[in-house]
Amino acid sequence: MAWFGLETLAAAIGKSKVDESTARTVARICRADLTVVDDVGPLPVGEDAAEAFHRIIDAAYEHRSIAVTSNIQPSGFDTIMPRTRTGTSTDPLMHHAHLVTTTGGSHRLSEALAGQGAVPLH
Image 1 (cartoon, rainbow, N blue to C red):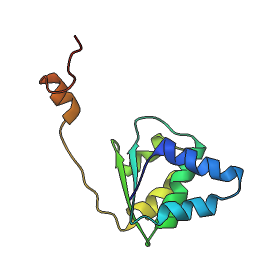
Image 2: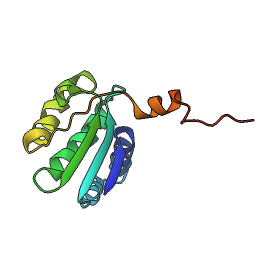
Image 3: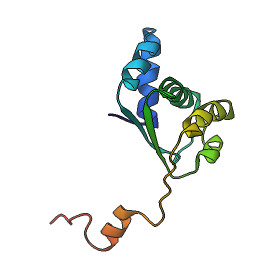
């Protein structure tokens, strides 16, 4: 399994551009049976992150599994990344997708409010 935040994924792909090893880097990431792109949506992303996301989606399409976690629906990705990348990324992402929608609040916040989170320092 390969696990990335969107910014971490963008940094990995960005580094590979320096020595022109982008295709190898993308292939290495997509060798994993499952690639997870975690927490898409809390912050807007630039062209580099959108490109990295697109490259991974495109390379894995119909060959490998990808899981994307987000607090927004894929149809709303154009609100956080350049529109030129969202259609070309979300279309293959959603083609054979299993969409899992969760409801409710944050488990971390619930635990913290119930006194089960942080332990006070003395």
